[in-house]
Image 1 (cartoon, rainbow, N blue to C red):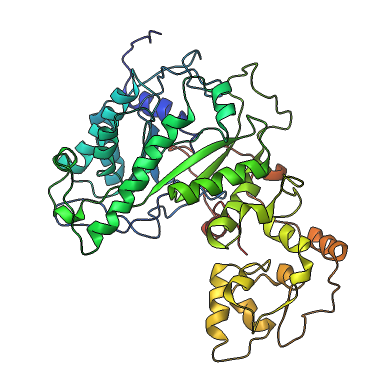
Image 2 (image 1 turned 180 degrees about the horizontal axis):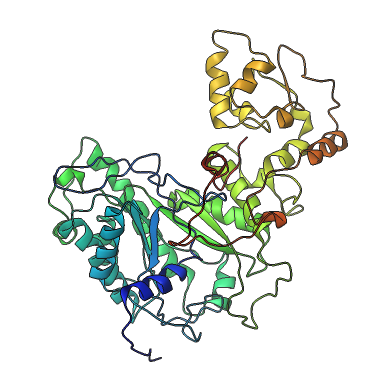
Length: 462
């Protein structure tokens, strides 16, 4: 395929390539803590550099763009596929570096999220991304957060060099199963996707040796492309890696998807798996027609379940099974699990261990920790745990304080379910018909409820 070559100004390129990046949701920035230095600009905070969030939990202070929306691949679900008639644009490495620095100096952004279509070849594309990061780190001495895509099929040495310049890397799994991938993305295969995932995993594990007593030397090929700093400070992808799956383009059920995510966490040490509700942008005959629009509520339930896997000690087989392969649309996964295991309740707040508390609807990670600490010196009552952040309208059916429940309630599934459904779940805008769902872009100007966004950032509170 030959792309039409026309000269575009920087603003036009930015509009095209920031809009083209809106379907890639894997752009969180937490996981790395790096202070500013005298010879550099910018820093990275461990709690996440993004201080403003959209109400569905996505951060908005990264410059999120594609390097190019030109692509040699023809994935049936991708708006930037080779056969699609869309306006094309490409940056140069220096243009991306200059944009990042210019926006940073204007206090518009605090970091960069850089993805790309496949321009010419995976090696050529990865080389362009690597050069972009090299310019930012070496010439502009940018010390802020950078998240970059690793291109499957690219030379491992290019990924290695890029990994020593980035904070986080991601390799998109694209679709949950190899069968779905071969049907909708014939130019991609699961083996090539998993290969850089494994390389990044092994590289991040090497960081433990650099931070510990054993200071192993870096490969010369990787070391020569790094900014001038102490050898032991050159960590490989210090914020870890993430991935993304499209939900609803192929017929996998929630149980299959969650099992894939669980496997990625266990086998590849991923920090996050992101779920992107399928949006039919190409109208290809091989794609499903979703009359009700993108499956946003399903995406939301998967994020909530993912939170339970990562922070609450649940396993995928506890939340779903082959007999019950999909999530309840009316209840979040934790409440649904509790209703199916009423024999484990009620639990006594003053005696239950930390992991038992985590399984109580309405008790989150922070409130469970506070309870465990506070009861060392006092006997807690319902007023106490409410101050600690426990959501009593959910928890009251499953706990006792001092052997007593808050109200006389029946530990029966129908009774609890009816009362829970009366308490409407607060869903992100766009989910369940609540407001319009759309990707934020660099030129939007909204006021955000930051506290709500932080509490509902792709997960659940309690």
